[in-house]
Length: 270
Image 1 (spheres, rainbow, N blue to C red):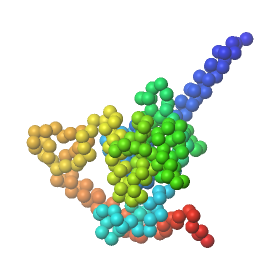
Image 2 (cartoon, one colour):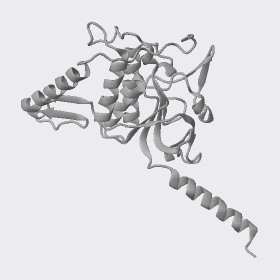
Image 3 (cartoon, rainbow, N blue to C red):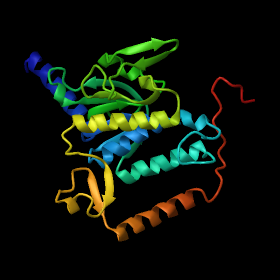
Image 4 (cartoon, helix red, strand yellow):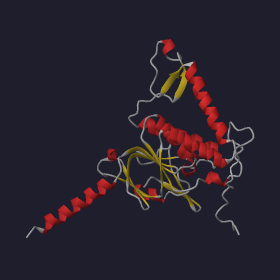
């Protein structure tokens, strides 16, 4: 008869192997939440060459806004849902992948090796593996409880304690936007998301200076190499990009959106 201890060990090893094969390839950055702060963070991390995935659990709170009128660049305001659509398109163009789902927990892959990254469990989906996690999921932060990142309760909500770069008490875990205690304003959420994205880039192995697109000769004309993350383009390329940008905006604003703003869930819709 086979030894019972060996059989038990083999079964555990098989279960671990099956679990590992279900996990997708490890990402560099997994962002929980596809609102303004998560999208801004993702654009920076993806443009820096980090493999970035957004797990979006549903509609952004910005979709409750009837007219976004304090975001620079839109003199007469802009439909909040249209702004979200354009931000998602920009993230996709940068190379960000999206997955619809709700993250239920985040845990260390190996408690004895902090460099091993994290495992994210999702409702109804296979686990995700990532080197870094950015929480941008106001107002849900329950999935961070296993990591003890330092949640702070204020009334019925929980915020996450962070440093100036959005870093939590756990290396490799960040928080951006309202969940990090930032004001409930779209421009602030976008700015903080970008700042947190930059922190994740600088904490990674990415070779990065700034995310700049500059005129041809800006660096090389001074005898310098173009720094990592930067790009020099000539005037023809500048005009091509401007034309493409104008076409995108004109198409996006050609027709009014039919969708109405999302009402607060506590309001009776009948």
